Image 1 (tube, rainbow, N blue to C red):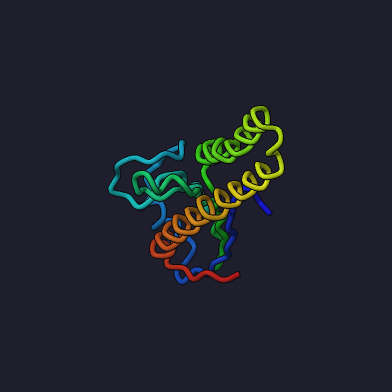
Image 2 (cartoon, rainbow, N blue to C red; image 1 turned 135 degrees about the horizontal axis):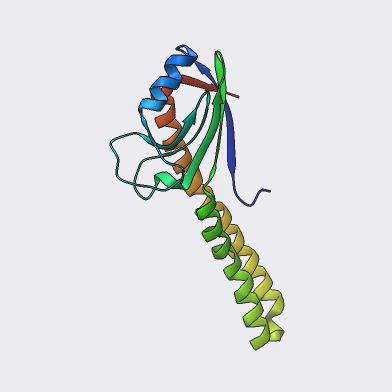
Length: 156
């Protein structure tokens, strides 16, 4: 089980490679740092030659997922992962049940078994409900926007 989910997809281009890269470049605001900002473009990030590293331009939600990919002749691939700033924040949230276990074990050592079970339950809820569902919804929004921009079809 991975701590943070990722998605790797291959896609097929309906247009030429140059048209797709040009379209993505026009709809991407250049930004080295993957942060949200108000813009009229669909994405923020870097598009160099046939490679890209972009985020959706939606304020608050768009920076959660980073899309890294490469466009080849008639195909390409994209990898979607959680932004490193969000990974640090989510790691802290995942550490909270462990901290709670340590503090409660010091206070009431006789409840250790129950506290361990509660900690594992909290970790599973955080990982699969909070992080998993957030990633699923945010990545699908970002991938749909990328599909519309590049005019592509995903396959695996």
